[in-house]
Length: 333
Image (cartoon, rainbow, N blue to C red; front, side, top):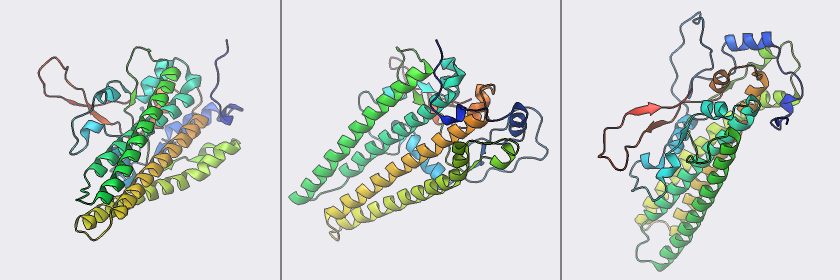
């Protein structure tokens, strides 16, 4: 039986000769800028010059980190509802997902699905926080205000249900691709997607090779996709400020409740667009990296081209034992 290949035009011809590929990896090419993740420089000989200090993370990287933190870790979070803890009971690094499949030809499929699951987790958190924000708005004694808030809250709960359904579907797709045991909890991606600028080094890597049109398109559009990501992050911050101002004015009787719900809807919309932009950016990065790193490149080196800073997580103590001091840890290759 033949193993299915990922559905991409990148595999229709040899992309990069082994010599050029080795030179690209040795030079640390195909790396994320040092704003939100490690550069994909292989271990071996030390660099000729000391590495520069990491710059401060971009606003998009900070926002993405906030949206990917577990629900129980958000400030002022209420007690977790039943079943919420199960969302985070199976941490899965990207490298493990690829290696568990036992099939290097699935690497692109798995990497892209991994980022889709990651975005779905962020969407669940965003929808959960939307409900909490609406429940914090004081309607006063006005029945009209109460009715308007009821509409917005019911819609937000529907959004959360849809987000959870989408997450479960994407998790199952990742389980199937990575060939994870069916009896395990559904996976939680703990490697963070990239939000900083991505250095493709296209002209150097493809100096003596003919790149496919798709590869050229990705190399040309990644800077614009990153610009869109940063602008979306700025829009989310601005929408959050507008929401807070509208709520404060409503509490003073200076704005109608419709102004608050409109500001809230704008915030939810910008968060959704930010996550969509993050997903599109990382799907293209995975496709570009796969075009350069052929199947002979080790899994860990391929993964190093794709991930940002792993999510900080704590192993919860067993439910039957007294709480014990938890130790911080990170997962990742």
